[in-house]
Image 1: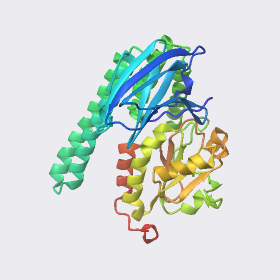
Image 2 (image 1 turned 180 degrees about the vertical axis):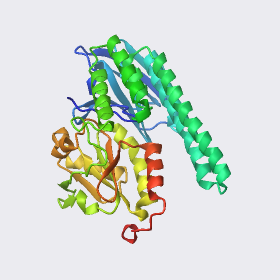
Image 3 (image 1 turned 120 degrees about the horizontal axis):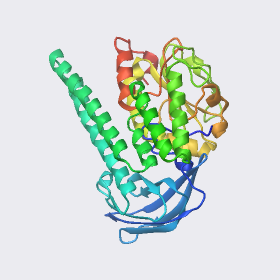
Image 4 (image 1 turned 45 degrees about the vertical axis):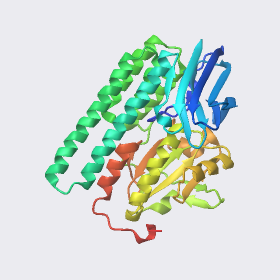
Length: 383
């Protein structure tokens, strides 16, 4: 089975939704106060492939070329960088407008699918902001009655988010775009049956889509792992297999040396956009809980040391445990852990047992907050 990144924002291993014949595309746009370059990028295997690259001229850009049908990403690199998912199909003609001062509020015209992608991202971002606002109020509340009321509102926020994403999924006319929206539900166990049932329905509409096939296979493998099927996933409460691999300096690092700590084992790669999007949250949680004995053990599925190291530096991944075989998807360790998609994470307790898998974003934060209650400060983790 080919390996893909499905997560939150799986925004986006786009390799798998390609047809044989390339399609003509036209992409243009305006970036107010812009000063930089525009890149159209595809993912092929483990490498980032640039289809086109151009500099802004008088705040405008134009891209014209051919590409196979599927997901790509448009990158603006200026004072800040933004990644915009796009879906190319026959006759794609898109116009973007952005403001360098607020890149998140871009607009797109010319294609229903790409307008829909923006709706999905906008809804999810607004939902996340609302969640974080409520969570902040809970953290600062001093009275338990107020906390309880806010927790109820937080649960309502979760339900509203899931219902909103499901509505976007049901309204989508393109199966691949519907699957894109599914990433924003996440791998929540209680939503597994809905996601798999919907994927089966979409597959009947477009059985030839490799993207749908790969996503469905990955999701079913994850569901089986939740049910404890060790042939397709790692069983919860089992002891994590040891990992002994070199770090960037060539020194050997062992996962087992971290016994006694809460460890997030993270399989990722520099070319995996969903992984990179989750990294700021990982840094925040590491800073917050490292003094209580929490750390991260990162296994990269990169194939080049330079790109691996550059991603660590750019994303400021400050924990010391970074290892890689530099074999991409041929990683032996990834095989042992049955990793078929990235990001994939395993939360490991002090005794080395796997207690949760694929927690990201707010779900990971909530689980760590629960685990850290009552833990003493670990003096070895203060620096």
